[in-house]
Image (cartoon, rainbow, N blue to C red; front, side, top):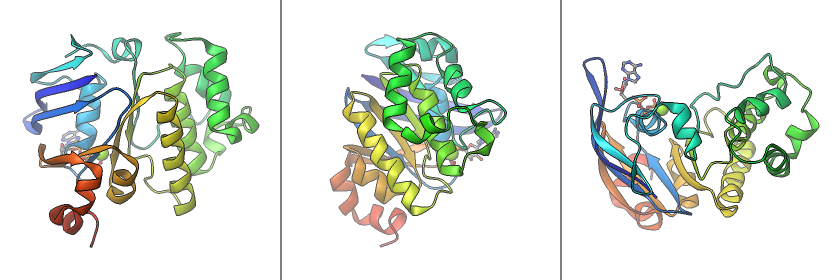
Length: 232
Ligand SMILES: Nc1ncnc2c1ncn2[C@@H]1O[C@H](COP(=O)(O)OP(=O)(O)OP(=O)(O)O)[C@@H](O)[C@H]1O
Ligand SMILES: [Mg+2]
């Protein structure tokens, strides 16, 4: 469904992504793990069009989407939840969600129904300002806002970062629910164990390159992964 071929992305002279190949099939949850600075966020931002790769190709269902601007990528059905949430603190929950629908992809009411079913707490707090929510609720809002464009593929950047353990499991359960509703998921996580347990397949990124890939089950038992990322 989504395929990256030999993607290179730079920040000025710094090459953050060095020839990444990655493939995500329809209906899958794929996790991308790696330590700080490995290039996980850069990979997501290159897919979502925020960053342009210097070379390589990105295909969505065999359509070349390399270098398209972010709003075109959203229109084509790929939506990103950025690292650090980036909700609008002064807007209400409801208004934050409306912003997620600005390209009018899909039906507004069914999008609201879906996110309030997945996150009932957001329905209860819909008139509250985003900035008054707890960290976990803000993460829910960030995910819900991305779902408001009715995406086929959801890109999640470290959804568990800085959250209490109980909230982390809730977020992971919800990612599972979202996937069961037919949304394909690319999940970036430092919490490698939880990510691999949830996903079908995984990639390990080191210094901007993929060094390992496979079924999540196999990666969970891989000696190197266990040592470097699972603390075992
Ligand atoms: N805006 C920027 N300008 C210059 N270099 C950057 C910028 N953002 C990231 N980098 C560099 O690019 C590389 C990859 O960064 P990236 O943010 O993609 O890593 P990451 O895997 O998401 O890390 P983290 O786990 O810390 O979020 C790092 O070496 C980082 O220092
Ligand atoms: Mg990152």
